[in-house]
Amino acid sequence: MLEYHSMSLLAKTAEERNVKISDIVLEDQAEVMNQPAGTLYEEMKHNFEVMRQAAEKGASPSIHSASGLTGGDGARMTAYLDKAPLSESFCARAIARAIAVSECNAAMGKIVAAPTAGSCGILPAAALTMLEDRGVDERAVVMALFTAGALGMVIANEASIAGAEGGCQAECGSAAAITAAALVEMAGGSPEEVVNAAAIALKNQLGLVCDPVAGLVEVPCVKRNAGGIMIAIGAADMALAGIKSVIPIDEVISAMREIGEALPSSLRETGIGGLAGTPTGVALKQRIFGGDTE
Image (cartoon, rainbow, N blue to C red):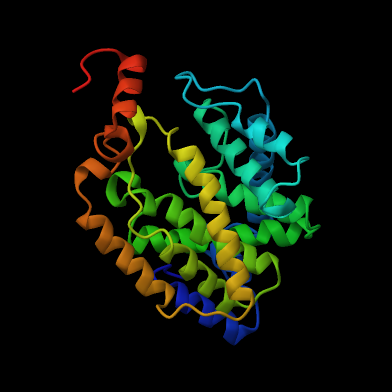
């Protein structure tokens, strides 16, 4: 039984057995949950379908949150794809899907927390773009979600995936890391490249604060999902190019925990500091909820 306390150990085990990380994770979870591997695979495939539906729903121009803070940007980004985006087709489509899934969440739609609702758009964006725009086999995409899940469990066990505890580095940072890992596996990379990509992605999000305007998971959360998918893609490309993280993934996770513990409470999902405390952020909170702006 795997304990999910070290991603490096998971990668080493996969390398020694000459299999993908997802293979040993699925095998382990089948044993722990006393269910056939095929049953767990179908459950993950269902999760992937929920991701697909959320991306489709969020891309509608009619979707808006109850607060009015978000909505319609998924549709705007999707329409922009026909105008030769600067980030090229793959990245631009991934951004559009990340925004769409996040806006679906903000509008109380059904999503898959990956690993949280506030960071729900990053992993689905990568998985859907690899399937629909790169033609990666669906089974390979679904299996990569097991690798993402394994890293998510390691981060949860060794640090945190909660913005209220570790800032947005624990949410969008973790999501970028698990997405980079999944992207490398989907692209045929080795377990070592998987963990290097995860480390590179997470390093680029260290210190990211959680400062939701009006205390809602909308601003700046939706656009941070768009930024997170770009970081994940960049990290995956670097790892696949043979670039290694000087600091191993497990140490990066430990550093994230230490940084999260050092953040003041005003920057950990309380909606007090950072962007939430700007004049515009305070005014938006008053407009939505009324009352004193202090």
